[in-house]
Amino acid sequence: MSIEKIVSLCKRRGFVFQSSEIYGGFGAIYDYGPLGITLKKNISQLWWRDMTQLHENIVGLDSGILMHPKTWEASGHVNAFNDPLVDCKECKSRYRSDELVEEDQEKIDWTTIQCPRCGTKGKLTEPRQFNLMFKTNIGPVEDDNNIAYLRPETAQGIYVNYLLTQNAMRLKVPFGIAQIGKAFRNEITPRNFIFRLREFEQMELEFFVQKGDDEKWHDYWVEKRLKWWVEQGIPEKRLKLFDVPKEGLSHYSKKTVDIMYAFPHGEEELEGIANRTDFDLGSHTKNQGDFGISAAVAENKDSTTKLAVQSKNDGGWQIPYVIEPSAGLDRGVLALLNEAYKKESLGDNKERVVLSLAPHLSPIKAAIIPLKKNNEALVGLAKEIKLSLQSLRLGRVVLENSGNIGKNYRRHDEVGTPVCVTVDFESLDKKTVTIRDRDTMEQKTIPIEGLKEVFTETIKK
Ligand code: GAP
Image 1 (tube, helix red, strand yellow):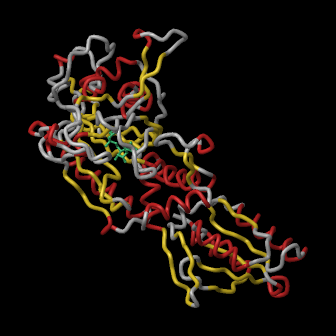
Image 2 (tube, rainbow, N blue to C red):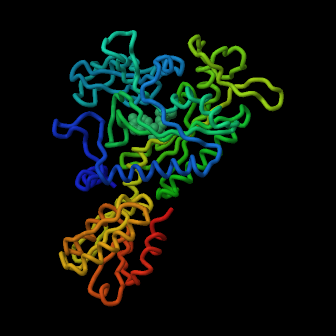
């Protein structure tokens, strides 16, 4: 599906809006409208449920976006969280050099490369490293002593709370800490709608394991996370596993497998599952020399705590390894919208747009439509039915009192409402309703009595 069609539907139907549109928009920030935020929450709540309710050894956390600046020195982000940037001196365009020319960056003669925008040759600068973290200042005075960073990943909030969480919850390795939250990156080339943003949301699990068990757990989480996306409605054939080559690994990773999805603009990363070894806890711990840390960590003179666990076997202290499945929530929304969006011919030159979202993710679960607008008896019964389905607390149920059944069906197809219930005069006499399935458009008459059960079966996950 073309991205333009998705962007247009998102705006028209209240899924996603360009930020600050009335001022001409604001670079690579998007706002979620009423249906978009519900879809997004449905995805994140399911992730949260699956992590923290269905695994006894995984607990949740919600840490601050702003953290002690030492965190980002120890984590390596101040030094290593960079993208290589080139400028065109002619038209002032900016590029990530590794996206502009894919070959070995060391060997490129930049004076021979043409600017893709203005076409001038020989005006591109040599690449320079650009740190992606947004900086701000804490307190009223802006100087170098009170710099803080907006977190570029939620993971570090988990590492600095590792020991407090472990002690409070009496956890033993292997165990995990899950977090969902905003992350910020000053991306040089944000693009493709909500694919690459400057403000986005991550769903991250840091799963702490014993060194030596790490590869087994890495395989486990790759398989588990792939299956999870399939359960949300992405066919397995549209997902691929990509073993990130050594030169593409983040500074903390021994191995990363990306779950790639066929986005409208091409195949790209939806989620990464990294083996971060003992790099992070090792970097944040004090007395690093005592623990035989495998990763190359910089000395930490600021940490007040040892982030280690005592071995059951020999009583020695060890820094656990970390397996990290890290998913982009906005990318999840985009992938699921792209999968769900379909244009179908209805014959007679008519067509419909239908959003075949998995019913458990749909922002509106059912529309109740009285056959005649403002007919007291029909509308009264429709309201009763709405309240009875609403009381199941499976999601939003709406009453459509416009009288135009066909238009209501089209509108609800377009926003992915799985069930439409029509209340007609037979509903008054025979206590039946017509339910229409969004995907097949099949209509069935069923007793009102059985509606709650049919609805629950359709929606529940
Ligand atoms: N804690 C590990 C980490 O942050 P990452 O591969 O940089 O790893 C994890 O990011 C996920 O976050 C990616 O798979 C992607 O889905 C999402 N993500 C990263 N940068 C993003 C951006 N600029 N806009 C939207 N999503 C992004």
